[in-house]
Image (tube, rainbow, N blue to C red; front, side, top):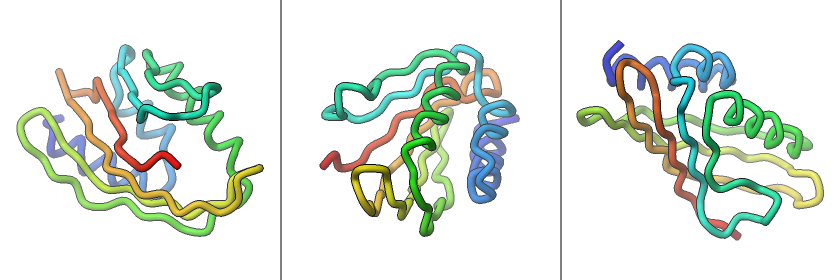
Length: 123
């Protein structure tokens, strides 16, 4: 798949809430996931390897008490990169309700996502 096809497939799966399926289909085994600076000490900023990225997702999902809504925007593609906007309205255990908005940037190499990086306000 080329970058545009990968971007469209990622959006399709994420809109269906199939994040792990997206990782299984579209991510390289040695993919890297990068979060914003300023996260709590118990949250990793850089995660390396597909299994570690899956585990990071499981841990994040375990912090959600209730999901109220969310969206995945259409991708913007250039070369081996694409970006999109994701939003999530959720109640987190011990934090209350949060309206999250982030820009997600992905790099593709050899038909797989090799890097994801998220940009959002850290409160």
